[in-house]
Image (cartoon, rainbow, N blue to C red; front, top):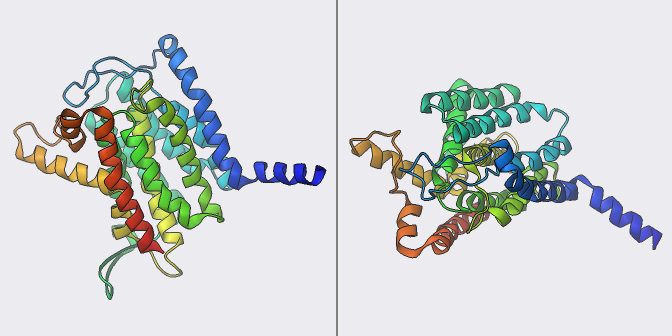
Length: 317
């Protein structure tokens, strides 16, 4: 019996399992605390952006719970966790300030670029490979690759923010996007971060799914988008084999729904008189919401993302 107890304790405290239960517990416990203390600390979503937001009532902001849950995963993952923590904090705080007080689009973009640049300076980033045909590959390296990776990180950050228009949508899409990355890294150290982020997202969905008791807010959606975009680069590179970069095509499939929604939004707004930076309620989730209601609209968007994530996993394998 003692041997069994010792074995279970060893498994429970191993980094593989701790990376799951720690973020789940911390995020799960932090979320109701934020709901309760939001009036005291004025941590509410500001529905001033009525052109994009469906909800008109203020709700507590839950992005902080995700951040708190993910910090232990960074400590478990590597010897230099602050190299990633500082950029993540910049992205998160940029969104949080925008939630509470409002931030000019140019200022938000500036700080997102700063965060992405810190990643590109702190880590040896892989080349970017894009396969047009099995035997025809375009590769980016050096400075052009760094510029493109910065664009990928900033674009992914904002893509998840744009799709965060219904309860549980951005968190659920982020979770589904992570599943192939978790599957291909199981048993390796690179498994810790996608598994930890997924565990935190499952915990937040308990409170964020319809009817939401708290919102991700811009801080939470930026946090999810930035990390999912970063993990796609790192993990796709780790499974691509020696002397290979990360496969951009698989990355686009993994983030298919947020990327598609963002591209369509840019085209739609560019054709309008309002401009690209002007929010609207013509996103896919808005249209599905008006036709089918909240829960059905979210599930209808989960479905194609699940198909795309399954396709990405098949391509990787």
